[in-house]
Length: 121
Image 1 (cartoon, rainbow, N blue to C red):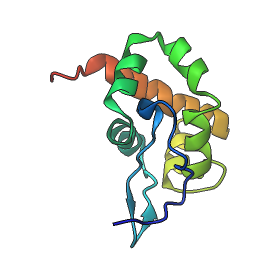
Image 2 (cartoon, helix red, strand yellow; image 1 turned 45 degrees about the horizontal axis):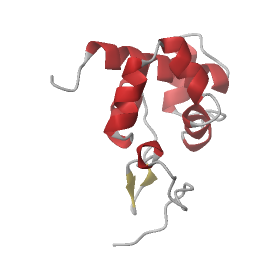
Image 3 (cartoon, rainbow, N blue to C red; image 1 turned 90 degrees about the vertical axis):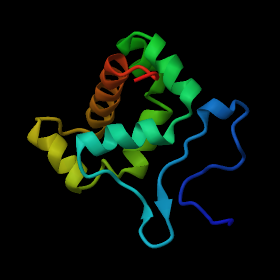
């Protein structure tokens, strides 16, 4: 089934491991996590396994710096970190108030999750 997605996925990236495949349904649209835990689970689900392995092999700082204008920007825009929703509210409770900081925090939590969980778990 061919459906129009609310994100830019065309043309496909030259490197398939950089493709983002977010959860999307015709009924609800793009899935926006409502908690930090849901965000980590969605990132693990929507990112290519090779991308995840590359991220796991980087230092946290290297990963965060490499993703600020790509994956982190996608998160800021598509998960509407510029607005108010359950995810931004859960981050604000943590004292994280700016969308740049929110996306960095989420990716940092994701990187830490990757360090704790290998692909053979």
